[in-house]
Image: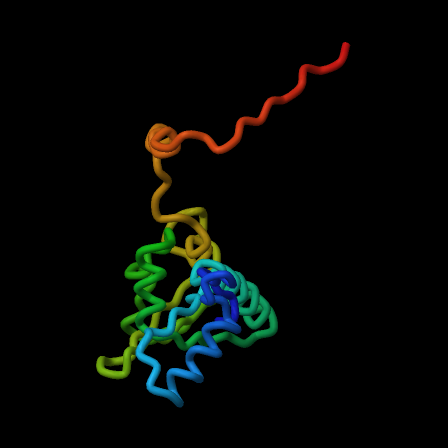
Length: 163
């Protein structure tokens, strides 16, 4: 899923093709310029993975099985800061599996299991659907102030309706 990228610019040579060419040159010649390349579009990759985690867990549960997602601790930190999921509320110290199960490791600390329901029972309690929500919605005023910091590059006018 990490093939979705951001930051590529062909004219600057930071697209995939240009970055690959410079990386090969860097590895085989005394080129000293750092290789600039696009990064992973984390939000897009994460959105696809999150929807797959929920859909595949739901399917496995309906078939009498379960899924176990094994992820690196860096992804868990991304989840903590960029989604509405209260991950600590889904920590499973007794290792009892739930509808969605995620094993987390950083290879230097004990493995942790986060487990719980896809949907909250009765609309209360932590559930994995919160994974798809945002942790914070800025006020409309703060967005408007940010937009007003720069002059508009275009103005669009809606024509008056014909009578």
